[in-house]
Length: 147
Image (cartoon, rainbow, N blue to C red; front, side, top):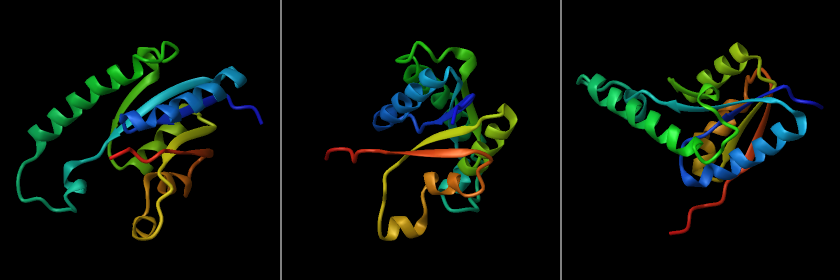
């Protein structure tokens, strides 16, 4: 199968560089278009729902920091120009599905920690993205960071 547009989803940690490298290999073999995305989750979601204070300033700071980190992260890959980088705000699964549909992507590439036990029951971003995705999904196994 030949892919035309590949969406790479990253969390901007060093351990997700293999995700980008694997995706860029597929991009090169298919002469595909590529987009790199990082999703900033709403702080209320991270804290489990209702937070009785205004988090808008903190959320904007988080978004600004994510923009800087995305530029730095993507700077390692000359084939990822400014126009191919995207910063989105929301729930990762929903945003990745939305972006894939809007951009006409036929492959989403994400990292997976391959969790087991309780972490598996709670779910993961890779698992969430897989269900209901508008296109193929490739989950690249990530190595556990060394302690």
